Length: 100
Image (cartoon, rainbow, N blue to C red; front, side, top):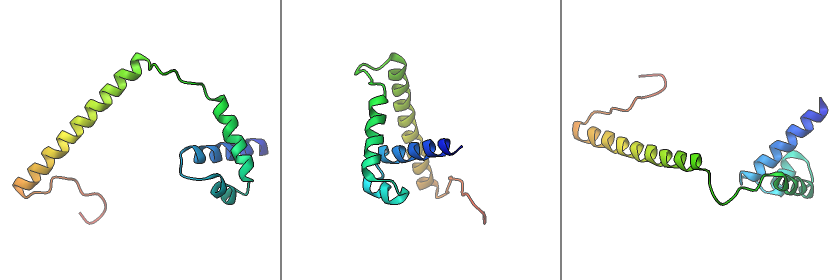
């Protein structure tokens, strides 16, 4: 049980560092683990990661293309909504929360 908690904490620390939100020193202060130890964990984790080839699989390319199209469609719809609100004077966006 304790081993699982340690591994979980270690994974959390590595994840926080890799997201770029924290430094080794700030994580050291936050979790009470030496910054050098965290650095060693991150280095070991990076060695374990599979090295991605520079060539992307076709399905990844297709998904990226779909995402770009969806983002473009979203921008178009947002602009249409903005123009409709501007011309009609009516706020079409749904208001969340109480007091509607």
